[in-house]
Image 1: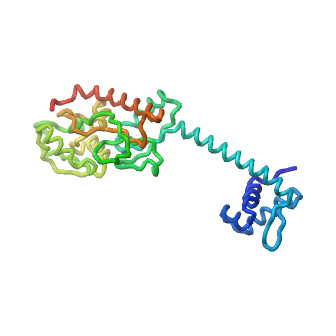
Image 2: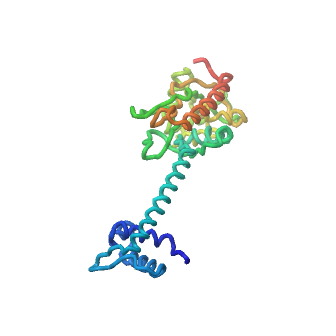
Amino acid sequence: MKLPPLGTFRVFDVAAQTQSFVKAAEVLHVTHGAVSRQIRMLEEAVGLELFERRNRAVFLTPAGRALQATTASVFEQIEATLYRLQQESRENALVLSCEPTIAMKWLIPRLPAFQRAHPDISLHLSAAGGAIDFRKANVDLALRRDDFKWGDDVYATTICEEWVGPVCASSLPTGANAGDIDVLHTKSRPTAWKTWHRLSNSPVPAGARVDYEHFYLCIQAAVAGLGVAMSSFFMVQDELANGQLVAPEGFLRDGSSYCLLSARPLAENRKCLRFAEWVMGEMQRCLARIETRARVA
């Protein structure tokens, strides 16, 4: 015989468990009439009465009880299989929350290398900054700069120190010939120029101030030749390498660091530990390039 649709058996199973078409409708978020019609269609398809209807109440017939014993087992097996498959999928997935500028300017260009090194881990990237609730966000790790406070329930692993310095397009004049070049600021790093002045004893350029909402916009404005920006070395090393940007005064440590945040110690989650080891190695390789550009503080 041709079996009725699986959905019909699901309606029957819920109605059999609740012993009520009304309650089954509430569980399934459909109308009482829809449940009643599905049950009647199933009974007509199999040629058996599955419920006895008395005084607006329903009771399983012997045939109904026999069928419900099977449907309950079938749906339990389906749920158990789906749960196992979902768990296996999550075990291979790593969800990383990353500050947008770090993601765009540093991490994403290096992700092919991570995928080649760890093909069994599926990295899911979410762009966000600041504090994070790991449970609500359903995130495994967060890559952040330590420019804000996080709770005592957050585990932090320092990846490397931050290095900063002024950068501008190679087409713009620098040093004594810089003149009134515009000075680019970003709201996400409001004290960047003051920190540089304190660390280097170099004056802030005298040009007009231009503000950008996000750090990556400030960097892109510098690439476009719109002025000089205070940048992280990590965020512009590719532009420095290809000549789009120059760093006439080098880079200095500004006292901040990049960190990996997690809800549990990294050692408790192998995939998180593997990502942490990889990202530390990548940043250390980047740090080796700074030596030729660094200033002595």
